[in-house]
Length: 196
Image (cartoon, rainbow, N blue to C red):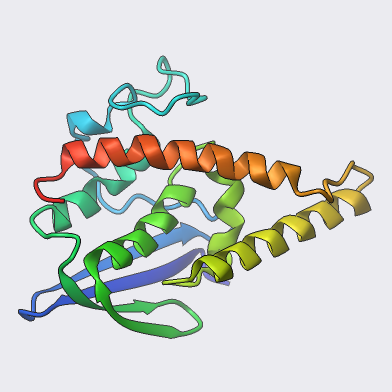
């Protein structure tokens, strides 16, 4: 079995310009392996637009882990607009996905993987979904996958003698924390981008 799971995104713009992003995930932990070594910019500092309730200790973490992972993406696409039309190809070990869409939708799919695998403890509960990544998923598809995965986890808790959450209250709590991270992280990215 391979030591890394790979997912490759290729963005092709109308003018023919093409950008490839290769994500490699640890096969056991699903943690994102660093894309490239670089000196993190000031917007990657943990205290820069820090998420409310961030559990990371500033004494041990100078930088936001997902900001560090997203530096490469921001550098590649900072001169483009979110409404730019692109053709996106996503290749994983099982299949190939193609879609003509906006850069915003393509980056949303790509950054979703990076954010849940990039080391943020708040987003870590979503990491198992990456194993079954579905690029460009609709809200309905995402909800179905998340609820299904959550219920499987509750069944496993039950089988291991732990208290399951059949009411899905814990799932709502996870999503409330995720929304908080998304809100604060959007401010961080806006500060780092030259365009929208």
